[in-house]
Image (cartoon, rainbow, N blue to C red):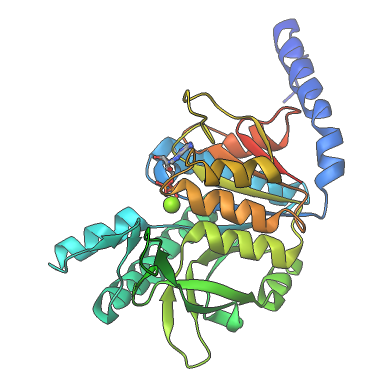
Length: 301
Ligand code: ADP
Ligand code: MG
């Protein structure tokens, strides 16, 4: 069958398409062969449209030669399972006190369920993702997290959070080898200490530690707010390390935003730019990466 000549309207549309692809060329050149660590969580992990967009963003990055590494959360999913099993949850300063029974559930949900769902999501849309926990290839070494509550006159109260951990080191060997074979690593935030004890770690902190260890070009933390908000609830578009310290000290940053800002601060020497971005915005990863201004809060040196 003979091919019809292209009509004017289609031609115009294709020209626009070609132009916008060309516009991304400087970014593609800049990020080619570079690693981007993405913390995935919140609404972007629940809403079907956002889930699909996330998978397509990650796959697109892979096909243009960028190396995405995904670290995911799963607090709400853990909460649901604990409820179903009638295991009570206690929180201290935003951390889930994690006894042995709770840790078993945390590990089952994060590694067995949430991690595999994300791997499946990416693979269904045409990627090749591989799920890992911090135990695989000795990826994430951890120690118990020390939480001290300052008291006015008395010595600080030390809170025992059980199996809540902090990253002590990251072994990037397995991630490197997966990336070099074209896979997309998807990491569950579970770590292990030298005695083989398992720890539940904040996913932002894991993403920060992985980005630091890999010398990633970017660290993106997806969340359910536009970014860091100031006292007037306005978006802070850019923050220096000094201003970030100040925001924590003055109490502008509280709750779940604290580990985000802290891990960006820890990454600042090894990662060119970290950003907290709104995971509720469709294609937020591409919008952050392929635009001059970005969409969220960037933390730079
Ligand atoms: P996730 O880790 O799933 O993205 P979190 O609830 O752990 O979500 O962290 C994000 C939350 O941090 C926000 O929903 C908000 O309630 C809280 N937060 C505290 N201080 C700020 C701030 N200054 N700007 C924005 N969010 C803040
Ligand atoms: Mg959080």
